[in-house]
Length: 171
Image 1: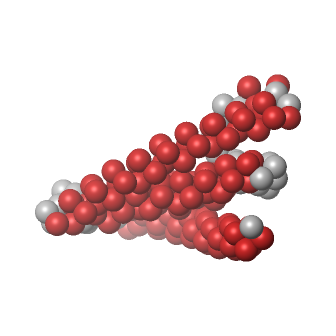
Image 2: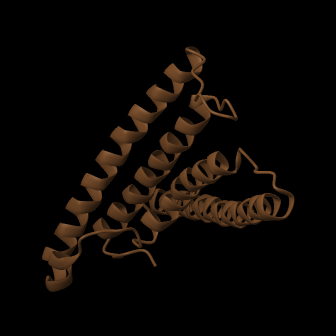
Image 3: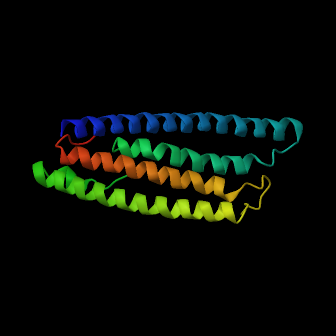
């Protein structure tokens, strides 16, 4: 049993490191997005030249920031959630609600990850492209959604395990 506990602790630690790294990458993308928008503004107003791809890059950046940061927030229980019931409950009732909500979140995230990976594969096989200035391969955009949901599912699973073990919410 101690070996399983150590294995779960190590896996949880790796998940935390990976989620933290991806959240950091999301932060870097936000800084890059700020620079792109600043550069596009300067280009338009000083030189009369619009940077056509800036709008697309902004939209794609927001997609990536969302799905790179979501696993980190899920792991820290800092994601958007309704906590009225857990807030008023105590002890085993609160743990039961947290386990139920975490399990449901895990299953929904896993389902969305599965759907996302299937959609990504189909877009890749069919060579689908978003018709826009950059002609972005669709699978590139779908892959981050699938990966984000998979990593969120893993984070939710670790939260459920912690509640089963009585450790409560990860902080």
